[in-house]
Picture 1 (cartoon, helix red, strand yellow):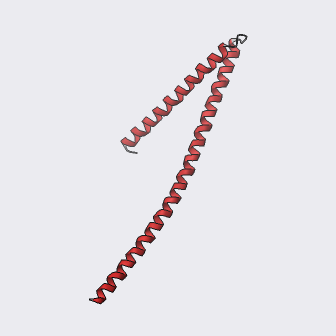
Picture 2: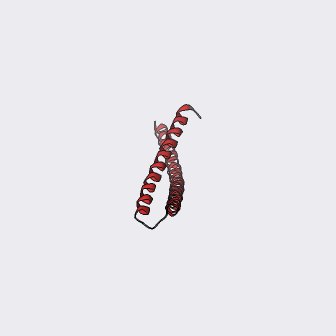
Picture 3: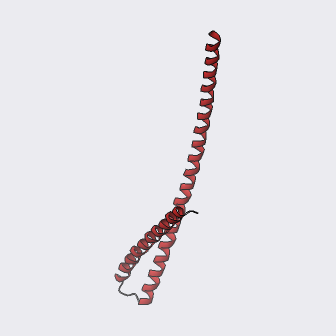
Length: 112
């Protein structure tokens, strides 16, 4: 892998990390606000709820990411199929046009 690809990969990894951390920080704020409104919870119960909620948020984020990645793969495959058909049709059309032009050239050449 050349340096520019490594840099691009590194930037993508940093962006992914920062996005994930921002998501988790927002989840921490939400669950802390939730547990603060429940006056009867012990610190251990608050910690358990926060841990469960963050684990759930990580799971949901992973599921969404996998779904999006799967969907992108499907759409890319559909695009490749459509592009292959278009390319094949274009090649056939070009071959037919070339053959027709050769026929016209031969006919015009025999008339002279």
